[in-house]
Image 1 (tube, rainbow, N blue to C red):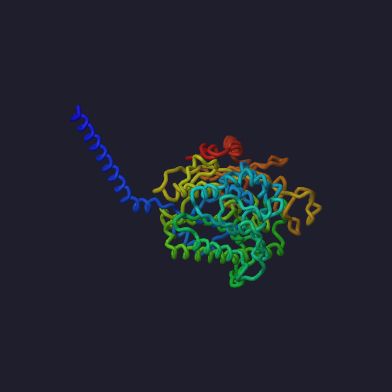
Image 2 (image 1 turned 135 degrees about the vertical axis):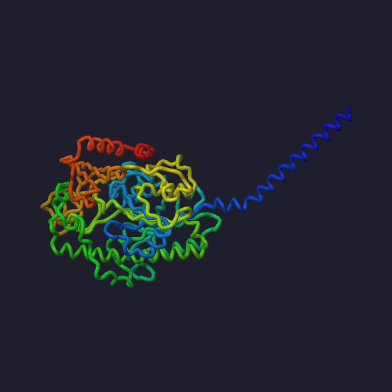
Amino acid sequence: MASLKASSGQSALHWTLCAVVRVTAFFLALAACLPRCTVCTKTSNIVLIVTDDQDVQLGGLTPMKKASALIGDAGVTFSNAFTVTPLCCPSRSSILTGKYPHNHEVRNNSLSGNCSSPEWQKDSESLAFPVYLSKSGYQTFYGGKYLNQYGKKEAGDVDHVPPGWDQWNALVGNSVYYNYTLSVNGKAEKHGDDYNKDYLTDLILNRSLHFLDDRSPQHPFFIMLSPPAPHSPWTAAPQYQKAFGDVKAPRDGSFNKPGKDKHWLLRQPVSPMPESSVNYLDDAFQKRWQTLLSVDDMVEILVKKLEDLKELNNTYIFYVSDNGYHTGQFSLPIDKRQLYEFDIRVPLMVRGPGIQAKQTLPAPVLNIDLAPTILDIAGVNLTQVNMDGQSFLPQMAPSLRNGTARSFFLVEYTGEGHPSEPACPKLGPGLAHCFPDCTCEDAFNNTYACVRTLTGCNLQYCEFADSEAFVEVYNLTSDPHQLENIVKKVDPTLLQTMNQRLIKLQSCVGSSCRDDNKY
């Protein structure tokens, strides 16, 4: 019996020792692998640059020689990138939330239109993509214009710092270059007109460079830079104020053409435009390009900094605008807000790990796709995030992800108008943004929703919420400048199909905005 007990004890000891040896060997092997695995799975850094009102249709990337070389040529340029709404605050709200305007409910640039309102802060801002990045361990920096009503007393004043941001340098109100107030981590900081200290494009760049120097190298970073260029008042840096002296707005396409067979707002401008209007828009066009030269410098300096820090090869850099712009198209002097290609198409270039250089991709990409793409890069489980957009990482880096592109999408806009327009009282109520000749860029019933499709048929179908129930339809293959509204020439069954798609998209939420329109 004693012999049996001894044998049992020795056996137990033997198995215990074996187990210890195995466990020790396992952890030693794991420890040997760890350095290699850490390198392989290092989380990528992300930089997002969002310009203000930079078109792509009218040559808006022409001044961006350095950015095109350092981002586009080093990665991918998307030839079919769109905003889902052509106005600053609703578009930026879509970028932050990954949602269509009918879901984040920002209608225009006013506080009453939900721009940076307390309701927005409570319902949407708390679910914006920087919140998820912060929870995933990213160090985050914001610099520049945020939302048009940000920092106003009714919107929480400068004390309000949106969740998810470690370093916050946000402009109070709309884009300017000098004489502004910043919210710096919730404290007001006033600036004057000294170029060396106050020029906003340069200031936010310099602060982002300090952020890079001060960050912890053990954690990934996210930087979002939103310079004012090329938004009015178009104040170029001193060294660029004589650039592009012989440049004028493009005269081709729909420039100075009447808005025949279009919504009434497009039928009211004087056409051809008076010489004073043409001179004004030419001057604006030239100054817009001048302001962009400082953004081009920003890209060059930032890329060089990332290279010096040995972080460039592990950093995705996105370059995009919030919306397009027009200068004289359909005899509208200068603005955005319209459904046409010049206002809804935006530049989009991306470089980063897994993206082959010198690519131009035709897959349609929307600004609501930026948030899920950034979260996808960060390793966030997208099934846990309620967004309308989809990651386009599979399109630009197929070696990293599988995925499908959409075949059609929604563009929507809620028009703005005033009870009376001081510049043009004879026009009556409901108009906004009118010029001295009473050409107006917006109205209450300039409210529309469009289905845009590029697969199979290159079409745009739009319905207006007005007393005419006006419809515009364009075949962009044969009519890329949208000169002819073909609604009366199209097969009624096609109109019915597009109408049904529009109805579904206008009520879509989350996955239903994606699942029904893949090819």
